[in-house]
Length: 144
Image (tube, rainbow, N blue to C red):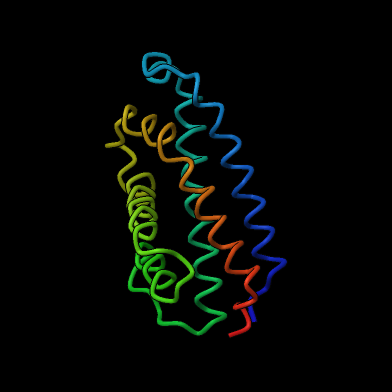
């Protein structure tokens, strides 16, 4: 059985990270490139928000005894296969997982412009993801 309290805590954390990313809206690329603290804040916030999504996926997959994902990105496919996410949204979330890998493993090659664009244009993916998880929990299918 899915631990709804745990998922709700993670979803609250995710909402907080999404709120933190709203502070990016007024940041210009020029200011972003010269402000290392803002760069690191945004990179880290994106990183932990993506990690939170992946934690949610893996918790659900484990509890429901669905197939083991081949990668972090594949965890979103598993949820799409089970109807928790749409296939189209799973693709967006797979891209998030790939970006997380870049933040973690290729951090010296991070393009500040790409980070800022993602923070400004893709942060709503976190809200959509949380909505899909909440809908799934509300349907009561977590006991399957």
